[in-house]
Image (cartoon, rainbow, N blue to C red; front, side, top):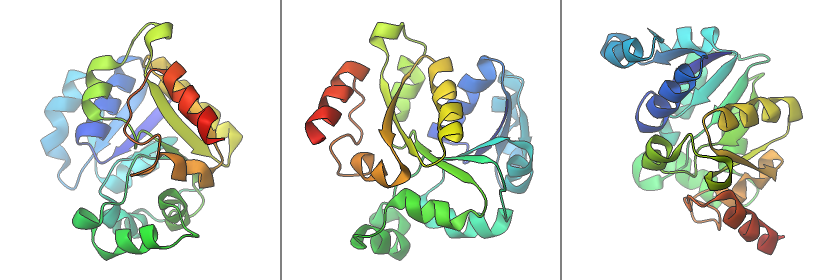
Length: 209
């Protein structure tokens, strides 16, 4: 599978290295892609601009500050048919007014906002609710010890693709539902940043429903 990484920091860099390690074709991106070359070389991956990564990938991991989403969406244009994994969260203290507006709007979720920005993409919410150190240190666990990664989305085929990517790196996908259900694992929600084994995460979800 070809995976373009937009935002190659703690989350994007870690996931990109993991996916390259299990055999996927990965392109890390940045405004200055040459700075990513050592990381890419270590896992036999590629580097490129944001535009190049979004053209390269069948799957795009979006792991950037929420406040940069509108600019990046305008920069890359349409993503027709591509799976977009939204791994971001709105933090007003970092992301400013756009994050505060989304948080204050009861009819809006963060991922609903992101999905609306990227024309044609099949948006799936995942990896926004797991600490990057957990991704680094607790991936590739045996099945009974795997940490839950919450997933939601409206396109079942795209969700299945992301589920596969989670399982391949030794984590446990937890299907939360449709895209609007992402509210259950956004900042401040019951499943946000819990980093729990899948059995415990399922118990919390059952209580919520």
